Image (cartoon, rainbow, N blue to C red; front, side, top):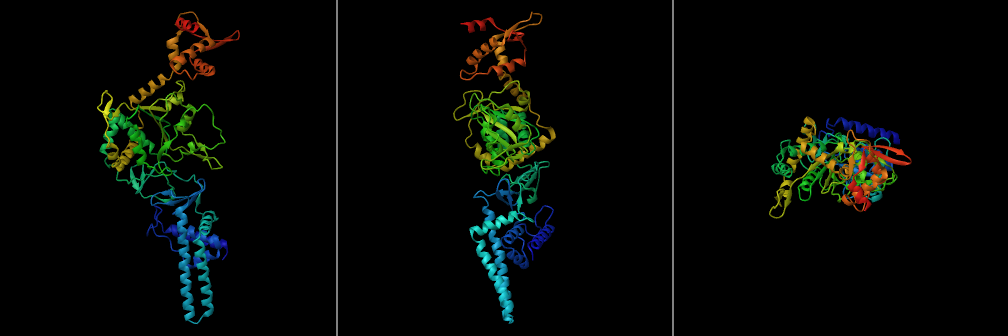
Length: 540
């Protein structure tokens, strides 16, 4: 039999196997049982050498092992979703090469039995021929039980032309409405659980068992309401926004900033959500940390040719949490808009040679004790940003201020006992988001507007240091250099004595509010002048 004929036989066997599967993609008889190859098929694999080993592995483990080209790693079927080996790359696949060896070993026993029968019947020629086949099988078994033998078997399992156990990688985690759990996959459109299917290529998953849409979490619900200052409207908003975050849609184009100064509950809240959606398994978690630096102005542009693990950390995430920025930091509006805008992202892992493009699937969140600065004039940036204020502080002493509450040291342990209920809380939030949208409360919109107002440096400078032309008054004008000098002095006193705003950036802000003309080689702004008091202070 030629290699091509053997490959066709493998395809026929795969087709037969698929006919035995249920619509869910599982074998109807026993989802854990391996298919049993015929002795004839195993013999033909033997004579196809290493290619045959790979084809036999592919026949045994289709829908159970797969090689992902972009990640250069094997994944294995874990019952309702695929998993990545945490011990080392390909650990499970290499271990299962033993089943190929066992298939050859079983067929060797078959030929040994036939040889004995032939010898008993006096057919020494047939007995010798059958014994030789059995011996070849045993040699192959020994080879497959070596490290090189295992590696070569897997190499041909993923690279044969007709039935490779390989995918490119873009097939993974493509269904935004699927929420893989420990005991099935929740359809986020309905809240119903169904069995996972290998053909859906779901990898990132929750380790929590689904106990139904009405699973209770009384401590969690009380906790979320309390950290929102006992405001049920704000608690309901958090449920909707994180419920939306459980999808992989990224259609709302929002940037959620969770702000509060120390021990306010936001850290415990996001940590528990991460535990529900994947825990400490970074390769499989649906929610996880990303570097806050990727959202901030770093003062220089990164080379487009270099690796970008920060971008790749977003791939497949449903909720991305960036944590804690230092005081005085500034947002990079362009990067925030890029990471929250739904545009295709392109990045590269440090050891990869090629860039990878992928569609965003994440809700972008920042947890911070300090509000980073941002240009008040960037409309698109502020349209995305939603500021959630955490007004309380939980202290390990007797509360002394109005916003202080006693710390509950056993709270986190109680919340971790409610993970199935918290998963249901998130899915109910997703259903409510589908019904009513995000619908940010007035508190969120007002806090965001106040944040933007606080970031309008130019408005503060004008209010404190300038005079504006009033209706009916004759035209007033001031040179650009005089206004810039006054602004720099004000900035040094009120904002930062170490940093400054460039003349170009200052001019850009001014042009959004005032007319500028050039006369006699000097730029003037019309409708504004430096106050006499400010001018006096500058002259001193």
